[in-house]
Length: 332
Image (cartoon, rainbow, N blue to C red; front, side, top):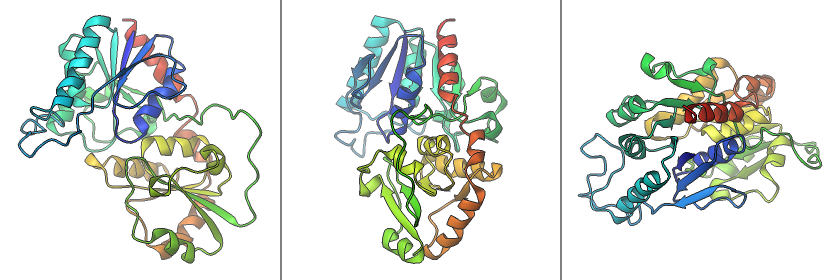
């Protein structure tokens, strides 16, 4: 039995679980305050929210800088950790995968369960991350070793499994192919569930600056597309996307020419991703949202760069590698 903790912020943590779970040989139980996906076939343990209601100003949420989120006297947080502890005590999992939480990592490890932490890019040298990564049995990095984090200490690198990126679009498409792209050049702007920081009036400004391109916006304040996202992206000549790991993996799976833009995130996670992509010349990258008049040149560069280099980032086997690694660690 493998336990798998899924954080509720954004959509990438849940997507990672569902993508790799179909390849696992071991039974897996998910623990999360998110609802179970409609097609989830395993056990799902619902957790209380640890941020509703928001903690008060005296909650010392980071325990004097040693943790990330452990608010004092918060009923939801206490119930959440108690549920996880009770589940571990009852089911005695062989392995706990944490995506992601320093506090859940420490809870599982102090209860005597080996922990695999799903690693995140960016600056992770703060005391809380350092402790969590140090106590982990292994770190699961959903990016290729070719694009390894440059500043990690050797003790982390030695226990890291670089799986390569993986996404829900890695499997061959089932059903008829989407319609061909329109004659007018098409670009899809993919915004994330973790929040988008678009410049004011970005959509009308960029459309006016690129009259030869037809823009489609998906996610964020624009909501989901009526057409399946896979088809929208596959029919786009260029995809503009935030640098969240899951979104980048999806664009990579479809081999679309892309402009990848870093959004402000804790620990500069997305900034680290665009710098890795830029160093490998995989896609056009930006460390912040460009001005409207920069977009004609950026889109032209994306077309010229093409999408074939995405195979170095996502070779469509990452989920299987991740599952094989977890099965192996859980069998020890």
